[in-house]
Image (cartoon, rainbow, N blue to C red; front, top):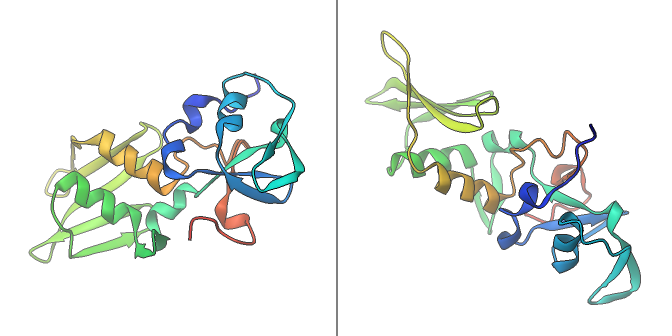
Length: 179
């Protein structure tokens, strides 16, 4: 069965100025996009300020950051940050000063000793802490809702919409609208 874009896929992003792309240009989300993904079909609509261009809803895709951006320095609201570090600090409710990024994991050092690994598990669809000791223990991460809200604010694609070709990576655009 062919996967289609649904309101559940993009609802969390909408309050945070989600952009969408159509045939070479992008613009902010609007009621027409929401109507489209809810199945209320209108073949096309116009965008304020671009009345000369007709937007075909079938061609519309949200613009998102790839999941790999969790582990890279990005610019958000004029500030440079590494999303996984910010998410870890939210989960810990504490500042993380001593850390190391390796591939898809954040390693946190306490008293110069490797103590925790923090990551997003695509398989389980959740954030995880692993206590690193004699036996590695998976620890419960509180405040998952706050972490997902922040993923939405950053427009990070954790639902594989880019891979399914239901969304466009902001990294593939000439101009990243989220910088």
